[in-house]
Amino acid sequence: SQRTLVLLKPDTVRRGLIGEIVGRIERKADWRITALEMRVLDRALLEQHYGEHVGRPFYEPLVEFMASGPVVALIVEGERVIEGVRALAGPTDPIAAQPGSIRGDYGVIVRENLIHASDSEESAERELKIFFPGRA
Ligand code: GTP
Ligand code: MG
Image (cartoon, rainbow, N blue to C red; front, side, top):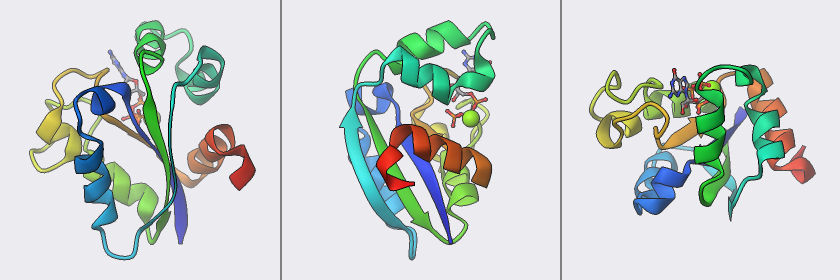
């Protein structure tokens, strides 16, 4: 089975949607939440996490937003959980996301799209080391 890093972004926390989104993940058969922690992220950590986007026009506002309040970081484990959480989340742009997906149900603007989930096994291992260094 797989492990993935999930972040509930500051908009999720501010809007009181933690339970709603954690519930959708938790109800999937056989997936397990094996770590869950609320914290405020600093710029150094965000630069590591979003390294592939450094220099892009949306990068600075993205980091500003991601540091604007607490996030909830989770490790989720289970069968095909990397692809599976991405499917629950829907595409990056919430307006393009189907109703029924997390972003499709709750999001409007691209930056404030509620959730991050690792997009491959390599990303998951890289990101888990950044957010949960003791859990490698
Ligand atoms: P994550 O799960 O958060 O990594 O989202 P993603 O994999 O669907 O998107 P990606 O990794 O390409 O971008 C990371 C985050 O940057 C997105 O979730 C958005 O919050 C933001 N983002 C990406 N592309 C754009 C864009 O074109 N404009 C704006 N404003 N934000 C963007
Ligand atoms: Mg991504």
